[in-house]
Amino acid sequence: MSTPIPLQLYSIVIPARDEVESLPGTLDSIHRTMLANNVPHEIVVVDDGSTDGTWELLQKLREQIPTLAPVQNVGLHGFGRAVICGIEASRGDAVVIMMADASDSPQDAVHYWELLNEGYDCAFGSRFMQGSIVIDYPKVKLFLNRIANFLVRVGFRISLNDTTNAFKAYRRTTLEGCRPFLAPHFNLTVELPLKAIVRGYSFSTIPISWTNRRYGTAKLKIKEMGSRYFFICAYVWLEKYFSRGDYHRR
Image (cartoon, rainbow, N blue to C red):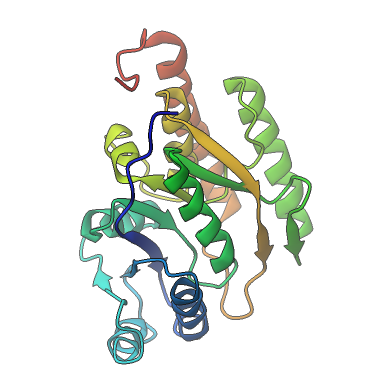
């Protein structure tokens, strides 16, 4: 790694659709953790077409959380589109993507921040390595997750064993180097890390914790996502083996 450029602001991007029950606890925990660890931050929550009062709640929470910067995705909806909307609206030189349902640990996000400040371009977490903690992961999703991640590891010849997890952090320069963003749905979660790896950006992986949501329902629909994941993996795989380094980090 080259000499790290000190980071100034950590943008926490959270896509949210009908998360009025989860957001108060999620945002309070993130804000308190960042303050306790002296992490300069903003919390960019993207309301992705909610109909349960999520936007109105975010306006009220701004009074309690001064670093909260909510935005509305007024275009087409979808997890990937909401994340991209949040990235575009954020001001930080580092960005972490977290879920609204409190499944991701704010303390792990702090560890990501520390890794980026050490000079890594990306900070990845794995729910499936020694030291990780996973609570109440649905068995069917776990089985399909491990198959999908195994195929990605083999196809791309990488060590990362949890590519599909959205909870990852990037330097702003890395995200700019991963453009254009193609995935409008949850397949963005594999597009970003795979592009970063294929294009030569450095990364470190740490064990993280994951806890199943307490409120609401999961937005990921497995039946709808199989072909979309395959498309984005195939796209980046073709870049890796046939682009002759045209998109590689310079």
